[in-house]
Image (cartoon, rainbow, N blue to C red; front, side):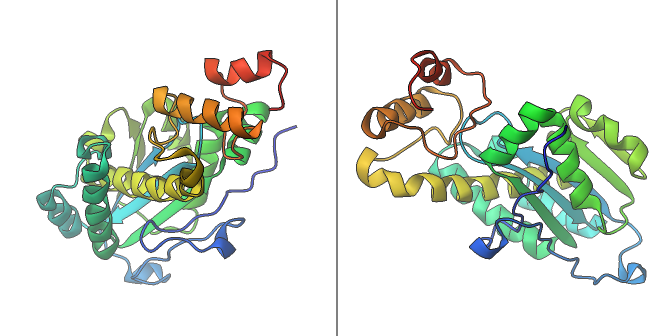
Length: 256
């Protein structure tokens, strides 16, 4: 039986989503209003995610709707694939600046977030791909009618093409279409903010925590130190992930 779809807390990267929205779907409505007659005749929608491969923290998917004029403006501002902005503090600052510009320029920005618990439910009951498609369906439900919808990830999202008019999915779309690049920046910025919220309470005991929750040496060191001191793992760890560091805890028959 498939897991119960919760379509976890949603919001926009700046300002942050409040705690009251963490267990229900929230959407930023189009500035043009809900009357379709007021929406632009030409509107481009881009979809991208952040945090798919992380072992700790949420999965975030964003949908950004741009007019042609807005797309040109953001391209001129340097909006590009979020991975090209860098992974350090300078990169995060740059994404914050661009995310603010995107929110001010876009016709609509919608974000869906699945926490570690929901990711585990879907990975165990169905698949991570099914969860991402489910979240995208929620983002596009009631959204502005777009002239085209582009999603990053052909194998992941091409299954949605029969469900939505002018929908296409391709690899590296975030490097080819500014609306997808904008979605990648919004998703990454929101995930950066949420992972900081998760990790910052532990820094008093463990010092600065890097790695952004991805399966790398920095994350491994943090999880091993956390377990060694507290005898458990942080609640935002994805227990369904196959990663040798997590397997060590399971094989040792220690509390997981």
